[in-house]
Length: 209
Image 1: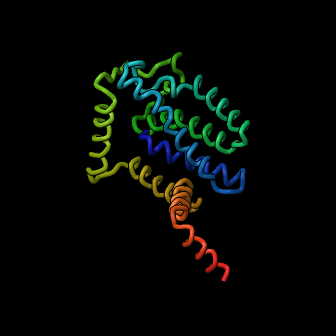
Image 2: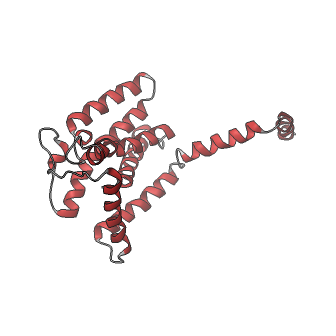
Image 3: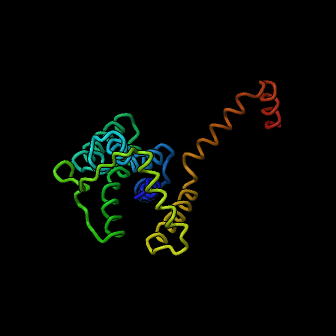
């Protein structure tokens, strides 16, 4: 799966959880944690494999349940200790959904269940050495993906992807556009803070009147 597909899955899953458990839409911190964690396994494995040759393939340490589960627990406990439990839950949910999503993606695309994705270092996925660099490998894969989109005849799987994007956008807007909302408010406060003090005082007086 592409990073933005993982981000969509992670956000939708946590948004549903937040509304069912906390009875409210995700906060900005929790939304960010879910999205960041959902792409973190690729941020760990792909550069280490494709650019530095630490792993043979882009499915290694970051995708392994032997690393993912302890990491989710540790982050969850740390978040709880500082009073940010929802963010810790969001991180764990986003991260733990990534590896099985790759397994499901492999099955839907090629009809194969590569459970080995979850079991590094006990099991490994193939022996492909992407020695030509992270940027070149990403460009090659993205070019092929782009060609499929522009070909005109989208597969059922591609239509499902586009549908998922639309659903995620609608859910995000219904949640109040977390993260973007906070950025806009912060920008507004910054702009107001730079106004001359006299203008601010006049505005307060106008509001009282």
